[in-house]
Image 1: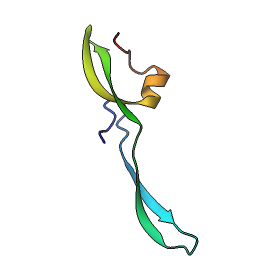
Image 2 (image 1 turned 180 degrees about the vertical axis):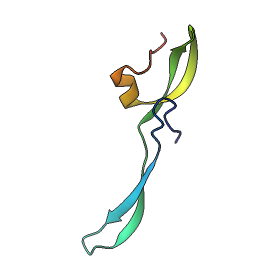
Image 3 (image 1 turned 30 degrees about the vertical axis):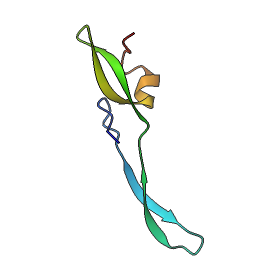
Length: 62
């Protein structure tokens, strides 16, 4: 998955920990959407995380 072009949020890596305390690698993907964003009075497609969309850091093009 891509990373957010506004805040830079990308994948996070950690461990799955089982009941017996075995550790295996796990990856969490950021919730990134490809949307049209207004930039310099024109519509541009960008990968933006849902937190940036919801908080108003980008202006969606209609």
